[in-house]
Amino acid sequence: MSFMKFGRKVFGRKDSGNAQPDAQPGSRLFDRGAPTGGNAPFDRHLEQATLLARNSPYPASGCRQALDFLSPEERGDLLADLAFRPGIHDGYMREKPQQEMVAYYTLNAIWQTEIMVRPEHLGALLALLTGNKSLRERNYFESEFKALLRLIDSTIRQGAYLSSKDCEELAQMAAAIRSAQKSYRKADTKKMIARAERLEKLAGVEVSATEFLMQRCEGAENPFAIVDKPRPNAQFWADLLAEVTLALNEIRLATKGSSKPDWSRTAAAFANAWPVCGDVCPSFDAWKASNQPVAALVQHNGKRNGWADPEAYRRLPSTIAAAQAHSRYNWQSDQIPGLEVLADLENPDWTALVEHMITQRRATKATRAWQKEALALCDPIGIELVETRLHDWLALFHTPMLGREAYTNVCNGERFSAAIDRLETAHPDWPARHASETRALGRAVAMAIASGASQDICFDFHAQLIRLDDHTYKNRSATTGVLHMLAPAYKGASYATLATWMRLSVENEEFLRGALWLVALMPNRARAIEALERTAQSAATYTWTGDDGMRSKIIANAAIATLIDMGGKDIDPAVLRLSRVVEHQTIRMPLLAHLDTPD
Image (cartoon, rainbow, N blue to C red; front, side):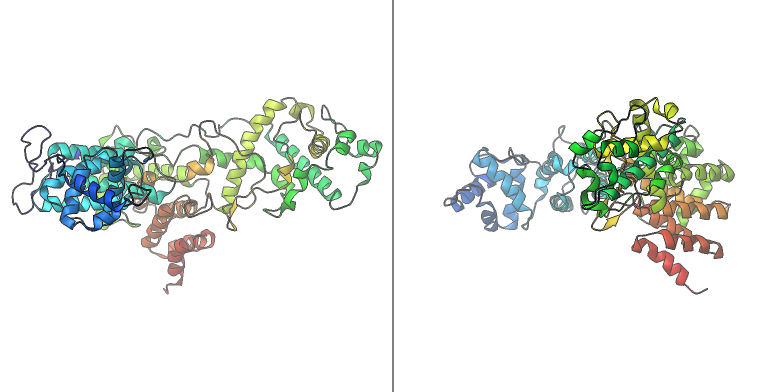
């Protein structure tokens, strides 16, 4: 972090704008500290507020009314006095002294009033800004933050200045905001980043791309990634899940309504229909003692998502590879995934290019100046090498290409890979022992489940296998056909799923956007169009429901805008394909507009 023109210029001067030297360490020309004596602004306000609240059981109820009796200048004096009072940032007010309670509620109410400050109030305003921990961690104090910056700017315009110590404290606050835990909602994260940028601008601090790169080059490998290893029994377990589902559905239909199947009448008929297989023993007595079948098999009749296709279970081994690929990196991290694939950071030429790709500009398309500088940075490395590595890195994000159907397969692959590990542990001998009798084993397992006698069977075999498990919210779902296998639980990452790590953080959106702008400048135009199309489709894929459910709306818009900006007839097929698969109407709009544009 470099300090450019450290401090702030006094309004109206024509000098260099450097910070004024401190008379004493930490001192300021206009900083008077907290007023003392019983005639302090807060003491007078406390007396007035107490008088107004004398008939109220709530001692702080007169704070807002007392503020209305003050002029804007008097409120400025009161605000400066409040900055040094104890308890003004404590949210828990029960059993607090009356003075602290009035100070707290007065500070919260004063932002809704007109305030005028003088230069000597700068120190108090900075104390309010840097001393409030909530401004560093929570995004919903925006009105208070903006009001403080406006008042600080007013004091500077009247002749106050920031000392070097003030600038350091503001820079530290900005750094703390940037390093704070990110919100699930990207809009909140962007709000906090904008807050840090405003503080850096106030302090005269310039955060270089070099520093951003140093903060983001530690790698983003996902510790919960699906391990790439041989799974020789994957097809056996997939076929067994399919047979169990077929048999469960047969039981459900046979017992639907008041019907009573023949095999449920006698023990002999039951044993003939549901024979023992290995150590799985369907029991007629257990069936009779249960609800015939268990309630979990017939609840809600599949109306939520529909019934599972047993054949979909047989196709599960082919879904593991896509789930492995998309689980490799944590794209939600503030670190850049797979940076070693793209660049050699020990080479200063590569470092300069990567720093240029970290784009802080809030736009979907690159400027001509940005493109010209990017090409100039590619020359020392070699444009062919840059192109090769750039495509290899983009493939980490878009390959295998996503979409609703492909993402559904990724979800199934994640669940199936976790199920295999549990099944291999619970029943290690089944693949070799029952390889030729999968159907018989599946029927025996299904009846044990339907009878409620599955204590010795792995819990991955359960009654819900016959249903789909697409998450639906307000009649919308990100998937179509997620099988009702158990969702994996990741130790130390509560409620996290593969969708969590596939969504892009704000920091990675900034870098990936720069990569998209750069790939459009590469010599192989056909390959660039393909990369932009695949990136747009993968970014526009919903991984969850809701406004923030898409992998990255920013990247989808940037990829589409860059693709259309390339121009030419050769982009039309890619634009047409995207217009058919992108579900978000706002993102589709530029695609449809391009297709409707006459030649």
